[in-house]
Amino acid sequence: MALVSEIPSPPGARRRLRLASPATLEAIGEIEVQTAEDVRSALAAARAAQPDWAALSFAARARYLERALALLLERQDEFVDVIMRESGKPRTEALMIDIFASCDSLAWYAKHAPRILRTRKQRLHGMLRILKQLRVVYQPLGVVGVISPWNGPFVLSLNPSVQALMAGNCVLLKPSEVTPASGRLVGELFAAAGLPPGVLTVLTGDGETGAALVEAGVDKIAFTGSVATGRKVALACARQLIPCTLELGGKDPMVVCADADLDVAAGGAVAGAFFNTGQYCCGTERVYVVESVADAFTRKVVERTAKLRQSDHGEFDVGAVFWGRQLEIIEEHVNDAVAKGAKVLVGGRRNPNLRGLFYEPTVLSDVTHEMRVMREETFGPVLPIVRVASEDEAIRMANDSDYGLSANVWTGNPRHGVELAQRIRSGSVCVNDMAMTYGALEAPFGGRKYSGVGQVNGEAGLRGFCFAQPILVDRFGGRQTAKNYPYSFAKDAGMQRLMRLLWGTPLGRWLS
Ligand code: NAD
Image (cartoon, rainbow, N blue to C red; front, side):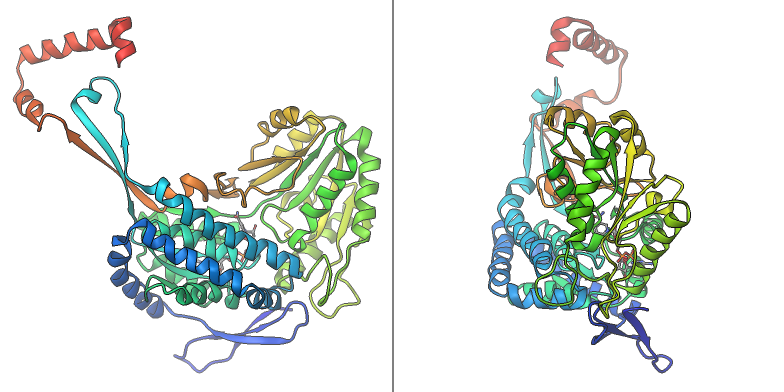
């Protein structure tokens, strides 16, 4: 089963794809796959628009974001409908993940980017302080390619685009072929906010268009998606010597300590695993709970999971799986685990009462690290629980993974939680919460190991869309350099006396 299918087209014509809703399997539209030629002409338009865009003040750029924010607040129901139709998410998730987080991103970068990106005067150290002034200028890179996945189809397209735009770049955005209408909304929103033509262009298509964008000659790629595609993007960027950030998959662990509030921790586990139907990069994919509380914790998780409502309309908690390929992976992981001795405590099958792509929220016990469900990203509503003898064993097993995106620790002692958090090799950790770090815009966000390269969001992420150019101004009009060349032994002796003074005496070391 696939939600995207190829429409036969005559040779030489652009490829076309047909889309169906994952919730109802009904047809919801068609898209054209834009070619390398289309990408090149979009890039030419972006290059032409970029100097004028970069010449605007931060305040002027921020005004476009503020207008977009006002329009998004006004038209949120219309946007939610598009996202729900394409993704099969519950309404609350479309509102929370895509709209709320996008409003926050627009408001935060409009307000803070001028401070973060303004030219900074920075004090130099030692003698240099007397001789030179340093300024660091954050210059736009030029044109940035943003490639986004389907699981947060609006916010994961909008958030990197907003940062690239505030930094003075033009953007070519290629949303997922599974959720093109949600990605196109980003373009529509900014067009309605009056953004000049060429500053943000949305390209539709699948991997063909994505690969063409990576090869087109842009100045940076901000990629969010799978490890397999991320590797291809990284190789292409390395060949062209252009920077990229890679926000990739995860296998996030949850550690439950003996002193945790078990009701709250069980609620966190269920939310972490089934939020966005488990199709959340920082979703909880495995739980390690210490022996003494394992039975009570697991019982609470199962009780909560059994009460979750799954549907394709009205009020419900767990939506559809976005496409057939993902549903197959989920089934393979659960079947492999069961074949190797895991027990299904609840769920464990496609929902027989619904026509669309629905997998029942599933809790597994008796799982081991020999099973695929514990090693590979499942990206579905499946929660395997492992009993461990101690917190040390939990941390060791949490770190026994190729991935390192996010993690969470549950304990009655937050200070102890922070100590445990530092022992987990992941991009971020939450104590007594599921993964909220993407929404905390001040927090640098990114993965370790296979989960990615580079960080997005916050000051570091925003500056990553710039080249930090240092400009050094000599306070004495360059006379010293002119005096020091050509060389003489006398000048060498002077330099040696200076070195002894600077680093050979306590006063010198204090000054240097
Ligand atoms: P994917 O890698 O299949 O596709 C992502 C995007 O890349 C799509 O737009 C796709 O069309 C495009 N693409 C495909 N082939 C390409 C190529 N050769 N060159 C350039 N672009 C190409 O990923 P997906 O299935 O859409 O997304 C799910 C994955 O994304 C999961 O692994 C999830 O964990 C990850 N994800 C990570 C984060 C994060 O912040 N770390 C956030 C959300 C999702």
